[in-house]
Length: 121
Ligand code: HEM
Image 1 (cartoon, rainbow, N blue to C red):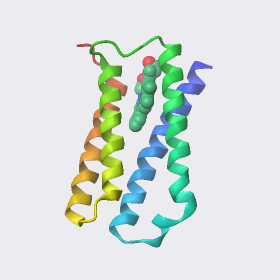
Image 2: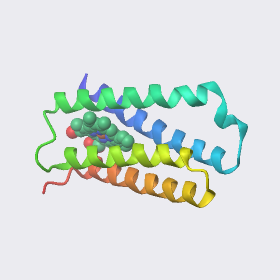
Image 3: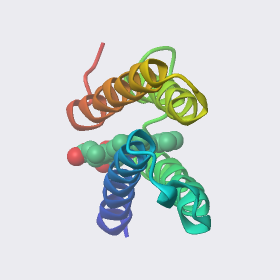
Image 4: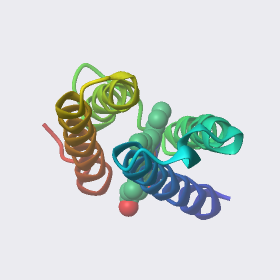
């Protein structure tokens, strides 16, 4: 059960990140694909499943956010990633879209670093 959920979680994380990058490409190239219904709905479904699988892993592995550990930091960076991701598509000016996109990619790398490294502070 645990390996299956972990693989599902990692697959969902990759789909979420690649999907975000693809939508950013469509944003920057002013593609009409960005406004298609599945493109608007699918990220919510994938991210909800990603969150649910993450919480399941948290319970299975009993690695809960404490005062400061990798899970806490990871959740902080995930919130930043979500906010920067939303701002990427909300911003009107191209330089702001690029700035928020780069911040989102930066925070998602921090999430991946924490997920793989599980550093102990
Ligand atoms: C952008 C969102 C996310 C990304 C990119 C991501 C990425 C990953 C990756 C790559 C791993 C596997 C690391 C390894 O090899 O051990 C992992 C594990 C884990 N994730 Fe996430 N994750 C995300 C969201 C979440 C959320 C929202 C939670 C909890 C609410 C969560 C909780 C966990 C836990 C507890 C593990 C550890 C499982 C273990 O120790 O085997 N993740 N995550």
